[in-house]
Length: 327
Image (cartoon, rainbow, N blue to C red; front, side, top):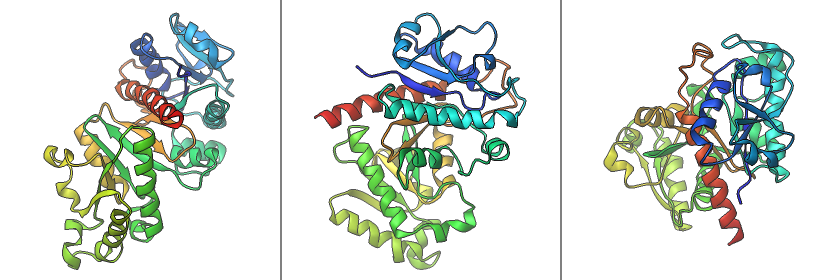
């Protein structure tokens, strides 16, 4: 039996409370999860069921959204940024990870955070969720994958200025990203021989060196080495021809060199249902692929599709990892 999923509250002034309730309404008969947060951050008439431990979540799901209480410094009116609650947001993430590592939850699913609020309010030292979760998981690196039914993408470099990408894009980073992705597709997605497509860094994948040298000097030799190890890899490919429907049929994941090279195509193909997955961790982590949306928080119009799909993905990945590890 798969244990409940631990859902973090995210920034309580954002859309997290609203989409958490909508996800419960959509999934209450399909899977089990509980939210970690402060009941004061939800509407007073919200169907919340306080629990003392994750194992109480299955019984509570029929009555309302199970909530594992975590007291925050202050209330959180929707859409109103409050730096006093920043440390609480960080602590909830750490608590969710701890519950999974203790075996009380099967996976972590995270509601959106605002990195600027966390930095200004609590000195948050990480570029985002992905890097903080790597620290909590005790790994040097983790890999961000965005996925929708039509496409999976992995950016090699993530939250850095575009001008810094060529320097940050080292052979070790590219190799680790590809191998971590390959292993996760086997362990967590059940693909026996993942097909990996790798984009070039430059226009037209460098066009033989006339538009950049990284492909010939670093990317292509590294891919040849990985092919010799038995990986199914194509590339380096021109990024502008990788994402049309026929091209997407030829691979299981696209490895991209920088943030927007990966995120623009997936958000164009399926903006509503995109899911953020962190690979390379000792636990499963998924998240909706959108931000806190302070501008619409509390208005009842926030779209919960991405969170719903993130919870479904967490459950499926946890089940597949357990089956793989017990085989």
